[in-house]
Image (cartoon, rainbow, N blue to C red):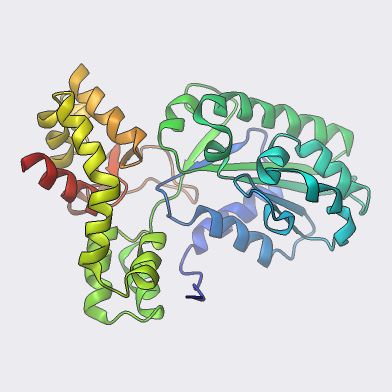
Length: 331
């Protein structure tokens, strides 16, 4: 089923990215947030809408084969043959993510890059390269930015890399060569707008927000794969995402600790101990919870919403995860 998904809200995030592109960044911005919260769409929308004088280069690091999906260029018209040599590279996205200089050289050979603004947008880098390489990669990006700025006498250069892997934040935050920024799910108004635009009635849209927390991918999944049958989607999430995590938590004797985190995600900060940290790491590695204390991309911090499982420093990526973990562990 083909579906035309509207781009909802995100005006503040788009404006923040425009500012980054226009002024440049000395340190790469590491943009992270829940799976399916819209990071990819945000970057692609920026490129599609771009009418400034900067050159934007978007790389989808997880694209395996299609060059026209792996690389998007905004701010200039690039002949098809400029990227033709990339067609034989597999997996094209992952390779290009580590050979950005060669890609920029191919683009520079066909347009005037010297003295201009350049923005590099690398999407889903942790999924493509692995968590263990994320620190190396961000250091590589900082060094690359300095090299390109000098080589082409750029007016400015901006680098943005995204990930959905919450565990990568811990590795990135201990260094000074990347600036972590958070993007979260849609707020209630925007989430309901998205659901209703896709065909949901008002009641379904409201109920959907309460279980997804405004996660765009989840909303689209309920619409397309489950025909607005929310209970069916919740059961799918329980079996595929939550039950394996619950089994591991119980096997390690961490039922109490996981329930504490379900009750209050900030329990890790308020009542720290080794078992609570172990339970948190299991949930983190399975992309059910994450640290949300970093500044938002468009400024400020994500406000706590206890009813959605969002604390001051930690949060469940979607309310449904918290609810299903509680049910699984309580039997």
